[in-house]
Length: 326
Length: 301
Image (cartoon, rainbow over all chains, first blue to last red; front, side, top):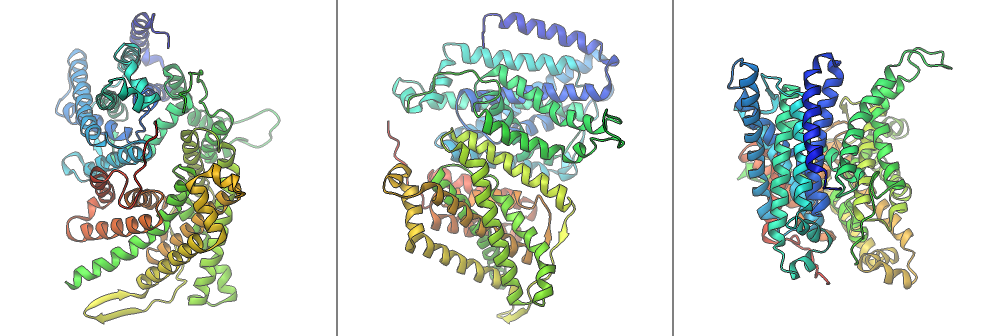
């Protein structure tokens, strides 16, 4: 990613998302929620890209951090009654921050013991942590256990969703483009060589986990205040997989590609759902000639995934980066 | 004490099913170094094959009966073996030389495909698995209440594990499997048809998963298209726990996970049972990062 114009782009993104959120009442609510999902998907995928893409670690538990952020922020905002718009946004910002920090703490707890593990072992341990978080939440009666938790305020809006998506992109880009951040890619390319060059690989891995988890926690807060109902089951292994797929389809370590993949993968099931709802189609006599797409849309989604991997294994939008010599 | 033994036997039955699934993960990992995420779904397909076969078989051999069960088990294993080979041929073989992550995502795609296609064709609602095996209640052995099903699970698993051990250690194809797992290039140079061996490994693992599916369905007779996810994950955890790539390790890991989970949910809390496998895994990997019986890989620079 070309970093020179990043600050301008960040400010532009803030401006556009502010304007868009002012015009939100004119947007069809269905699409509004699809946009929220896209923004949340971008935050999740870009932050996971720091861990999986740039640093070359393999985390399968990103939804677990999202769950931490979602629950912490929801518990905080549920303490509040009806507030003025100004106070509401202030409290919401603090709640999101608290959610992000708690998730970052969870990331630290996961990061420290998993340092010794590599590759598939790391993948399965992060998966395990994600599942443990889910099971712990299922056993906490105060937050509704398996029944789920109602979130009183639907404070997520376009400004927060895309403003924070822009911040995530900016921070990750700033981090990996800094002198310090080259270390992430060094760990990715060759851990042994990086260590031999005097890099503290452990510190880089933990940093990647903590920063990634922080943004996942924020995304969780946005998610909770958009759906207004969260269950532990909503943050399971399958959710984590969705974000991993975004990162890989986008091309590991390619922020723009990952953003595009997040948009595409959120829109794809919705698009298939819409196609299925079309009433008439030229050349077809049946009512709703594509209704089978509705029932089979997830089958099509999974088939597309397989075909994409067979046809473009480097990811949809990836540019070539010199491969490490093995 | 009686209750403890009771739980222990429940745990052993559960663990031996996990062991059968775990073997499939560990064999594929040993040869191709990738996690075959679709393996848990083969387990599900095994159970469903039994579900749809049972009425057909019942027309020939009266069910419930031992002979009928063996026929259902055998056909289901054969079907899934073929399917496992087919999946390898269509989805994984074209990616053989590609990065492992690509194959991993493809495997996730295959897994999702089987689950969603299963929901479409079988229906998402749970189904009652037919009683294909006669059940005797074996009681009064020191006050233990044993069910013949649990003994069958233990017995069949043991036989299958021994058969696997024989195939891997004593047959020509087993030797080839070990050779490919040790060094694929060198094995190919020695005239081993690696493609053939890899397909066979998938078929073998899938057959064991199908057997696990039938045994599971006999013991817990509610089956649905997503039933493979959690046992699949736990079996994979078992494989990693035992040291991935090691066959005895996978069996041992399965037993450890099964017994621990059953004991914890019996004595401490059953609502935490799904977290147990992962907690055990994390604890063991912290102490021994290569798993219980795994070989420590020396990193070459």
